Length: 281
Image (tube, rainbow, N blue to C red; front, side):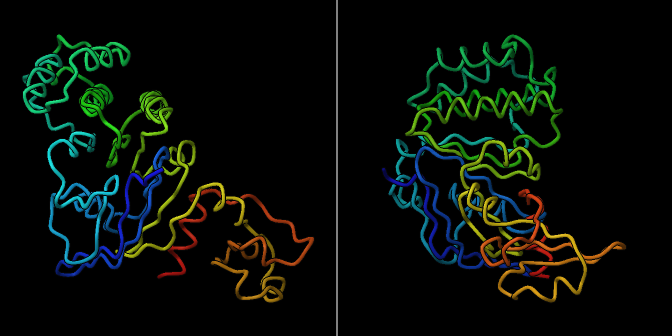
């Protein structure tokens, strides 16, 4: 099946920051979590994907088509949810839908209102009366009501309480049940991405440090706790990163490079991200 999203050698230069040779491939039917510190380049990458800013180099294909030459029909297959819903506070939920129906040729009023109902969002209330979670659900309903095949989400779950976040995550997983649907989601909440993602891409200071299947990342890395003397007995290729504490050392290691019999703890995505970024520094 055709990839939903493919970035090859993408670059963007600003004063004091550069996005460098970004390569990302999101297969159709999958969820990719996009992680990195503030200022690492996540939002810049998403703006490039959405053709909101001009890139300096490289190519971006969405369902096999170069994004800079895509027509309206192709763009309507992409739903976008940002950290700010962006709708006028004075509009009701239903009025937002009426306006969107004049923008998207493929708009489905029935789909939109059905989503509002399933999300328990009162379409008769004004946007200013919604909680942050309700605003995000409104944005998601808009994003899904026009024949969407690719969802692009930038910090859509940030600032939400655990219940609202869990409801949104369930919505993402419902959407992905169709193997022709895909999601590209950036978030600082690594535990959310660990729950739902098939792939993880980590960007650090404008450079991709890894872009791999989540399960492979978790299976191939482990956490070692011990002494500096023990650590010295491991090969350099086994060690991803280390840090010293009051009671010894902790290291992120590659399991297949470690000696047999060494006890390792499970490494979570947050552990992997932190150790990789420490080594880059």
